[in-house]
Image (cartoon, rainbow over all chains, first blue to last red; front, side, top):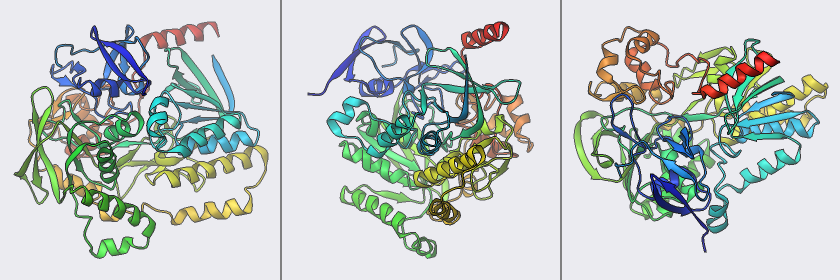
Length: 87
Length: 452
């Protein structure tokens, strides 16, 4: 059995392998658009996966501008993307 | 809080860990910091424990090196972002994972800040689902998660091959690899590279694996554009020789494009270390001696931050710097056998570079066909045409007028292309903060300063 963890993304549960990166949990759930570019409003998703590009910033447990690629999921973690309707 | 140590190491990859472990085992006080939630850097990036339990650790030696550093007494601080330098010119400013400020002073500073992928714009590259190959590799190796179901890899360099193999191992349909150069055929350059048979064998192994899976490698081929609404759905490719002309459109749900790696030198530049433009790559590299000592006597630059060369060379550079610091701090000379091994480093160059187009050749190849409407700077949403209109040979003037390269990534993603478009230096100046930092961290730091 593979242990899993469930997090809450934009008020909906998402389940992934325990302890993976938040980007992996989101990509595994086919949730690619995580924010809208503040200048042109276009949808953006994770790009570099190593903390360089800042395209995967989301709000985690109320803390804004958290890079999903540098964050590992914890059970019950609340994630708010900036593009909740883009799934 | 101020952390005072004999040595502060920034960057917990192969080079930084090797240096830190050697220094601490000789009795020096050492702190190592890394922005990632765990040590290991990109090469030794640790899989999630559950992924390792179920599917194995893809680089077990990374875990062993981290354990060795801890056992030697290195104080490990993952989740710490070093973003600035205090007015004294030697106190590093960092924030921990909770956003609290941390100040660090070392009698010596070892910068092992690694590298990041060289990106290049094309129409549609801002679409969700377009990523670097490194992102796909991390998802596969650390998180056992496929980046997509049907994927095209593109760009240039040997790294595309192992990424494709990692995706195949997860059952992903790799629709093809578009390589801008023509490295995988026997020519005079390839024969020259036979002097490094081990590296070639590794590449040949990947090529054989891809051939068995019938993954086409389209050589001399570049991305013309990506299409999709809220996520990439197709990529159109062109011949590098006629880059504006479509030759093939492939349906994908992920597209991973990268052109090798660039040294991450922002902290070295922030600390005032002299940098030069590498003639072969056009990238900034710090000026160092054989032990990694920079123009600042207390600052060493090791690993990929000192020039791209792979994990083996990175570890050797880390060890060389550790020995130089130990000699300075303790007076003990480097053991003769290790000194001989370090002397051989000079012969260890980037083995396969000659097979692939150089970054300068890539610019010549890719820039002319790039439409004006293409987004160049993803952060500030600045187009290629806007930068071309300000192309006066002064990249800083172009930045100031267009805001290109002035967003959160500070030009790490677009810098190569923006410099190519604007002319002038290919590396942007490093300004404090080198990464975005929380206002609350700055306020807390200011409050600490008033009470200190």
